[in-house]
Image 1: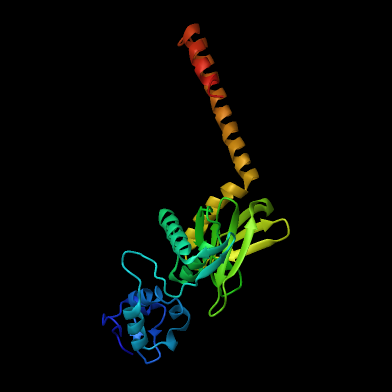
Image 2: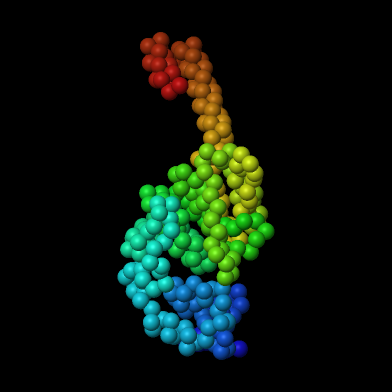
Length: 274
């Protein structure tokens, strides 16, 4: 086994070998950095790396129109793309994809490299004015599909893709969601969406903490009863604390420490907080 990348020549690090070799059809091996660079151009590398040789990778990179400025290449883009709004032109698709990537940057979305294909589908899944509020790596429980789960102002959307299979999109509109729940697990926490008809479960293998952050965000939207209960509890605790302070003020007045005027003034201030 070679201990250097077949493309850049760099010596492999422990991270390069931790999950196994990135082996090509001719026996060459790529480091993770070179694999990510090449898969940015052609995502099929992630699912069928052993179908490519080192010369294929070199030609792919040499012929790529992807620029470091972040401009999206026209390569492999269809002339029109289906969407909720009808058809997106190639230019509109590029503009919308750029907007979505900016939203993900603002959210500091910590998504895996396996989610790149799903992200490229988002321009013709989301409406033109539909923004992403939260997003995480997640796939249907007991499946091998890579996938993402995202929340927008009007729905939760699941986008998933198995190797060499079409993208699958499932949506859950706000009016159909009764609540959401979370099952913590060392191996793969589960996010549950409770709808009027069923309970849908999503697992997150890649970033457990980020999955919990996603849940903590969406529960504020969908678990209204829980939020109201917490709010009522806070109000109750606050009221009890204020009445306790009133009792202390009364005791200070009785002991001659506070005058009637001082007691009345402090009492007024406390009651205004109720």
